[in-house]
Image (cartoon, rainbow, N blue to C red; front, side, top):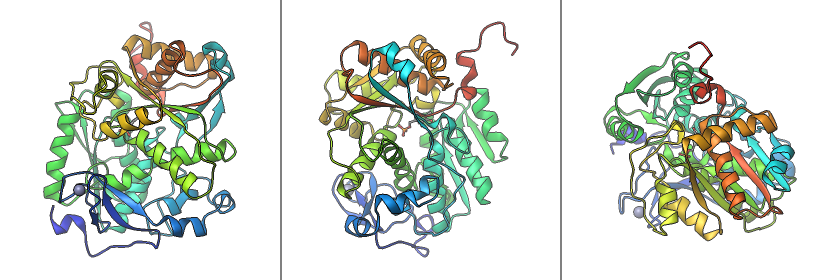
Length: 405
Ligand SMILES: *Cc1c(COP(=O)(O)O)cnc(C)c1O
Ligand SMILES: [Zn+2]
């Protein structure tokens, strides 16, 4: 990758955050726009000095912070005292009593990112962090390869921050996802092909144009934003960890970062240690991680996606093996469900809890139900299901035939 893209000149860091590190070989790098290790091609991750964080962050300092993801700023890879704060995060953690009763659970919570700000999906978290870092590194144009929600977030938050924006999506996305991007007036590239093909195209563009791609060359920063889904649940449960979580898997990043977030809170003395079980949800029509789990493989065989759950339809998941490892070592599961079960899951959550989620959330609820029925979630476990997107964006999935199109 070229020096121009890495923006070596503008290297703002903090005492707690000043390096990237390869997840595979441990090689360290300056915190620039770089996501692949030069030694072994492994993925790079942000490295922190937890002694610094432990000495400055307490439950009280967090509680005194803003009502957004930026209350956890010391755990995020930015140096700015003025991050891009569009009110992202601190979404409701709702005790789902009626759904719990229906499923036969005793203590079930929904982490409701269907109402995350500003674009109604958890992607606002990762984009708020990535664009704050992009601005620090001196980028004026930001971009992404998206399954839909990421395009919405990148376009909206770039508009707020005054950054130029060019987003790439598969051409067959839901109308709500396309409109929810276009309204912010970015350059929108609709590519004939699936997400994995769009992503490959974008990797080439990132190498030649010097743009900040939130989920490619800025991926180490972007992915850290998902940790806030772990921090918030711990804080909202009264500074404790749940027994079991169920979350959707696309690239697997979100899943692995909830895990990292919980562990950082334990390491920094903010919550007591606990073996939280991590279970992952996929759509049968795009289930490479679930298939690997069921066949007890430690590698992923890429698939060609074919499901209504387009926001999580990644056939070649970048963090798939790490998600697999976490599910196995925490004694969790990875399961997949059919499109019909996904629609049932959307309806079940709406009817029991008054939450209208998109197909990804339907996948999570359907997998939750399947795991309970299979005895793989104990009724006594405090369980949190992560709802990551809003149903108004994927109306096609549940629209009755008598509604005008
Ligand atoms: C992107 C996305 C996910 C999961 O993303 P990862 O790539 O696994 O981090 C889950 N739900 C929704 C609604 C999404 O848009
Ligand atoms: Zn390496």
